[in-house]
Length: 387
Image (cartoon, rainbow, N blue to C red; front, side, top):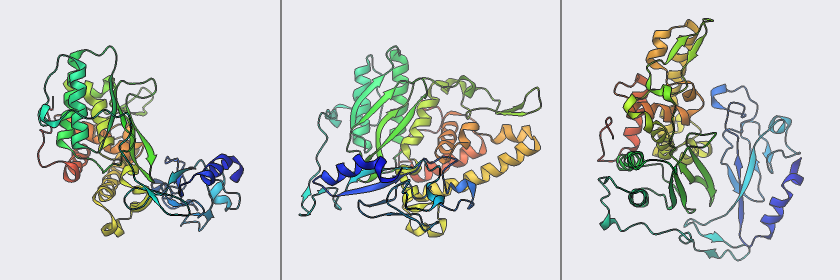
């Protein structure tokens, strides 16, 4: 272990003509040291080291254990910081305040430029950015979406792909849904120097996903935005919880939507991740859910701190109902098992129900209204009947 396993990384950084930094990347799950949902029992805190960025020859600092680490698994660090640690780190270019690369020794900067091979967006004058137009072919749908993304978000589009057998009717439905959501909501500021692949095709393991990348010291880049084309059929029933034949509680996997909106559930869920996640908001690097330091946070970080408060109330009420086997309460409040995975999925499941159910649960409403408060544009569509 130790520096040997990262030898290639260190050699590459040494040979580069540009100044480098390194950024800590935590696994960010229930096993991660310092996970706030586990309380303060861990002696180290890798959860809040996630995204910590230092100059390449400096050391990372675990503020809870007091350890200084050259990199994850540093053999000189304390045992509490290295045993079964699954963290890693990435090397990034150091940049000046304008985003320019900085050369070693001379300190000269290299200006950034537009990515190569990125098609220019259609001129805004040729496309109505406020009203989606039903199209007879997928290429026109792609042009509308590309123009919408590149004129109203920080995304630069590399390509837009639909599932090969998707009908033109369904492609229009997806296109109109995402088009209208962009009209309604702004996102956490993104720095998307690498162009983004937009996809409407579910994969074997995932119905949809947002893939974040690293660029210029920022985690707030999106490499791929997959809105999917499949969703779970049981989203449209009204059963959130029930007792099985062994008298055990069975919780539905996902939050609920109206049957006529079922096809769009994955797209709306992934759009919530596009609006923002803990990583793109910088929660792991700066806010760290420190409500006491609220004045130091930007709006995105403040949003996630408030969202965490909602989730804590939800978890307490959900756990009590589970303990009491209170099926009525569970059927009134549960947002599905997936919502309990982490704060990002809690947000996405609540937002999906808020947008797609005519009678959303109280926590879906709280989540939706909080998103509206921080991210809804001055204009936009209705909360329901989006399609």
